[in-house]
Image 1 (cartoon, rainbow, N blue to C red):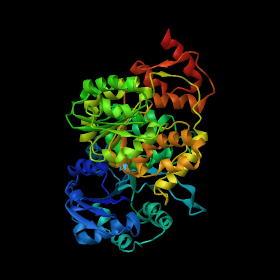
Image 2: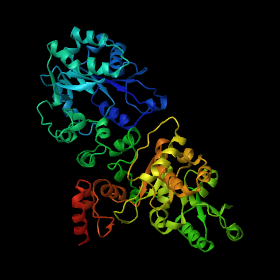
Image 3: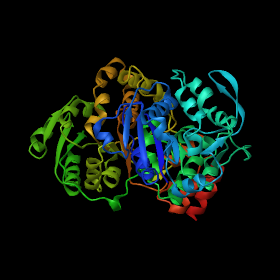
Image 4: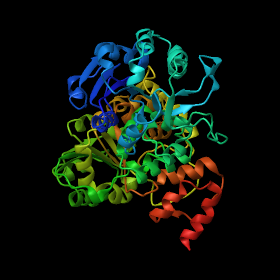
Length: 556
């Protein structure tokens, strides 16, 4: 069939997400002609990655409906009538998760004059602060019009009279929820792949299955899942199960969801964490030279540290900070540089003082003496593979070690750290460019050591941390602890993601959060990771009251 697709793209950062590239490539085989309409700027590099026939760049005026209307005017209504169908679609979904071609063939050959993927029943909704009655309608992220509709005068009339509203609520009221009824009143019949009107919604927040009924959508093999569904359900336990079902029941590249949701939502959602653990079995080593910082307070420790670096790293430059003058004489020739700092300076403050030496490296490392033995297993033994991965994946700005092998349920008092974290965050982002969430558990390196891309942490390293500590010496530990808490999130705010080393199917952070957020229960014995994969993954779906008994079964 001769099908036309009018596809609207928008990204508030004027960037291009990889899920859009995949989506247009997948749709290319179904549609004879694709008109790409972007309501945000796309440069030529981005355009070269996309599958389309004609391109329309416009301002985000009037949102999707005005964009589709402009696209139709560009094509011309007479030419539109030559297509067997005209489809409007936007980039607000992931997919196709399942094979979409059979759905299109079946729906195009049905008795429906126009059709969509999902619908919403008649209901009242709060729009712009007022409760508004809405009629039953196709959800507008995807609507296909058959030729008999396109050729009807009502089609051209509707699209030629679309207003470019500045208020999105007017678009919702006048177009998104009204277009279906408009064509019904013109005598046309609509259909959807998954008719939700009579479905049970007793356990849903509201009747919008595209957001709150994802399990049902997957059961009906609906090929598109709304991005908003992952945002609205991000803190619900079942989102991990839903994500796993998408991975297990389809060939859709899960990293497209992970990569996009990291930056449009938040980087450390529980369902994302397993996807951010490094799989060393698939990685090769690297000979990239790295810069490393190590703070030393005892001369006797240095030889063993040098031995570990030499054993597990290829080319590296070691920058030692210390208050011990004898280190310069003894080890000055064995390392790149020894920098003398004030006595009592902690490793974080020492690292910040010399961080300008590390900015020239693609990948740098910060290692701390107190947890060095744990860091050997998680960050040094696989160092060549970590460096290779981070060098190749330019969006990765930080690699941290997972929570230590023995994970107990004692609380971490992060509440007392929040004022310091908020102060530091506001210094870095005074205009609130990115929001920092207050949490019980922050993703940071359990060993206090980590690998990083210097540009990812550039903003936080520019803070004069020593001056803050000098103002309140009694808060030095709290300030540096808060500083460490922020590293993952500053990297994210700067456009970089993180990865976790020493991967488990269920990460230590997830286990810790389960205990911290849901129950005061304690476990007499530590939870030892790694767990059996089948058991570990099942822990996500269990109420916390069962975790104690599960742990006992694992131990027995």
